[in-house]
Length: 286
Image: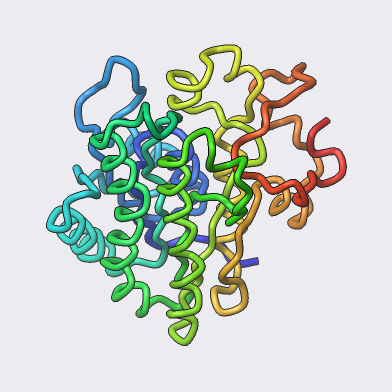
């Protein structure tokens, strides 16, 4: 099986949560990780900075490059990507993890927040991918992985928070289009999404506090699922909208209790955007 030893990952929003979990799983193989995020100073409600993330990545066995980068700013993204490629001799993987969320209806969504979500989610994903692609073309197994949902156009996912859904689906549309556009270059574009809520700062601060966290899975399930995708042959696996436990079950995992925040939890909280026909693998929700 392929691994990520010596590979270079450029990950947006990797100072905490899912992005950091993906980084640390890659680091266990001896990967290089460029951490592109805004958090350089500690935040009262958000754990970690790019520097604490770098320490964790290096403790896990990898090399880290912390980069202060606002993915809304083209010049900053271009400079960060070039710095990462210069430091590590190229880029093999781009992970578009950075995201903004606000679950409000149309009348309650201020345009400033609408702009933020679309600038970070849809536009930021397009921009980071665009700047990484010239370097990915030189890799022997190049991957772009977007942390975005399957494209299920059911009205139930739009009506409560149309602005957020548009922004997240913009990330998924990048997968749909770029997978085909860059197939000839051998660059894989895939999406990964969790079946349940994941214990991140967004879940704790915005979606329901500690009760929601207790009914969630840990970020490590996304780190492990991303690892499976990123070690596949990029020329054979592209254009897919993956669910975390499906990926792991197909790879042979059967013990999903290890990913529960609360091992005794019986009813995990389903995440948004999982289509009804994407049923859990046997035993995954036990």
